[in-house]
Amino acid sequence: MIVFGSVIISAFVDNIPYVAAMLPVVQGIAHKLGIDPTVLYFGLLSGATLGGNITPFGASANVAGIGILKKEGYEVRTMDFMRIGIPFTLTAVFIGYLFIWIVWGG
Image (tube, rainbow, N blue to C red):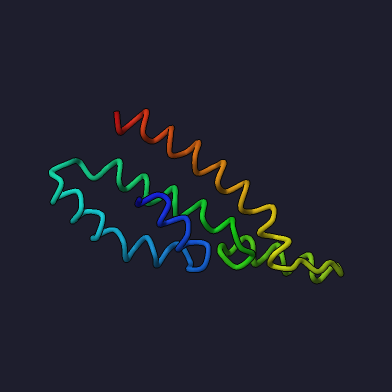
């Protein structure tokens, strides 16, 4: 839930303040479950980082890239960006989720 929730929230909220706000929450969840929080931290990090790829305003690099394209005369609409961003992000998140689970979760 942490990974996929972070993906959705980070598509619309900058990932740095989101991760900063969620660190104590994740630590609290790990404490209540009696587990090492490392795997949850990596889940938060990967979800928040990759989630910004869904929208043109979800990551600073996207905003800069869209600005450069606009300056060069290309218009990129949000739905056009999301048509590419959603499948890419879901694929990357799924692979990252499996990697994290195999290396640290199992």
